[in-house]
Length: 262
Length: 323
Image 1: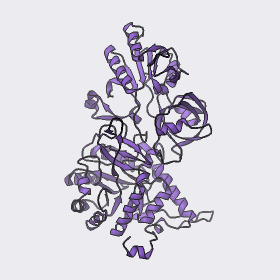
Image 2 (image 1 turned 180 degrees about the vertical axis):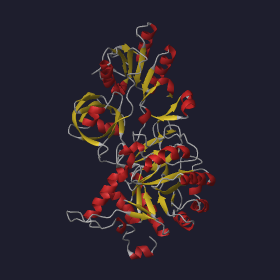
Image 3 (image 1 turned 30 degrees about the vertical axis):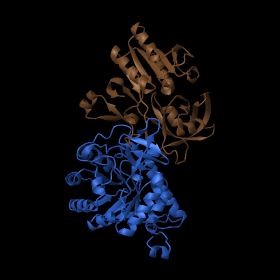
Image 4 (image 1 turned 90 degrees about the vertical axis):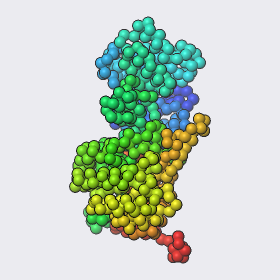
């Protein structure tokens, strides 16, 4: 039994400088991943520095192949973003729990995306389409060239520099839509920078709508062993469960927004 | 010696520690393998020599706030804070789960007082399962203020605790030592005097990492425990020093990723090894090491893994000079 699988890169698409999608051959990941799950990938297979894997939401699957989206941010992601077709990725996964698509507390899925938080949204879109749930997608980015709009639908853009769509925050776009009652029984599915997640959390509380947030943290093992990726439970969850923290890797990465402190 | 059909000698990986026979000398280190269930999805636990459990204390511990881990050059800093389920859940759920596997269990115990160490040990002892081989006593966690390091940095308290726990069990008693002392030798000797069956070393080294833009420490507790390949040379030297200082069996720990790493520890004087941080990268790291060890022995025509133990070749004049 081999825990992690060496997976050859079959396609690399550079969306913008330092922002690439990597497609790799891995039938297990491609055929069993559910929307919102992630893979833990070594920056360089067989090397001890960088030593730890990096978690990436599975961006897309097709046949025996899966894709991740990598933004060169630090050393590990920089190495990964520079991977070539034919290079081997060492991939552990799929890991974590999927998005709660069937939570039955909504009729419109509102996807609130910040930057590379787009990573889990294409598979979520596909899962929602299969359930015939209407989708509205509010996608915020620093600038238009950093937007990865494949496999998404009903897109509304917001950019910090105004280069595409609304000049400002995607959260204000959602707020405006909520205020005008344009979204029928909505649920927010959100992933992106912490500031955006917090804004989404307050928005959901204010309007009394369900909201699920997908978290990204430092992570080592990705399988619940190292206890390195805790997220603090809201007091009510702590009182009910006795658990001060849950783990992003195995209890998440997505959580009901009212249950965690971010 | 087994002689398989192809005629090649199948090396004997078995190791004895006290009355216990392990199928191979590779254990997984405490805190790097949970209580087995998490990793079992990714590997067959029964192929390991044994599992050292996540530390268990009398009451459950929530652990430290984030950030708990930071990667550093060929290693990582952690400040988990002994997050664990507590001895009651350990006995009710974790121990029975591990009892299903054909491997040995070593329960790692962390505590903040002599009484707590003894109570946890006696509680597990009273609820033991057949493959519970013994206990590893964590007197070396650097990340909680009451985590036992006050024992691990005092020779007297190490000896006192070992003596007390010795009286509570006939199973293996293994004291896990810290490298954060001037010399490990007197601690090894104290454990021997007090009747321990073995010592394991090293636990993590105190380390630190700083965000130069915010000027804040990267870990919640400012300092944390450094592990991974970065610490292997230090661990090897400490195993070697402990080997010279006492005659107790040694379990070598520190940065072992490959079978070659494990072989170095055996040559330096360890009878067994623990694979730790590597489990965070490869959940089957321990099994990879065990299989690689067998391949190494076969290739080198070494019949028994025990033939490697303490086989370091140091020139006589260096030995005479105290190296």
